[in-house]
Length: 73
Image (cartoon, rainbow, N blue to C red):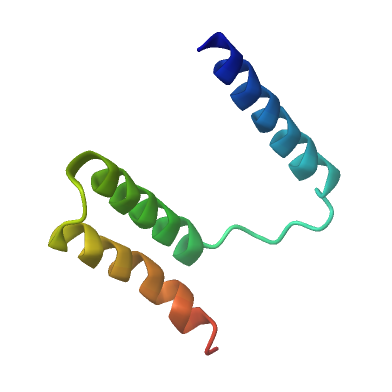
């Protein structure tokens, strides 16, 4: 178990370094993308805990819909 925690922390460290290195190339945070990400993350957590249910599928659809519609702009 401690080996997995170490690997997870190492991966998180690499992600932080990548964000720091690209600080000049970052786009502004978009509420549309952030809220959709939170909804999809919640839906994924519900699928892991309860299995695939209609509420989880609906949450995924609601979370992905704004992202799909933003490609049409």
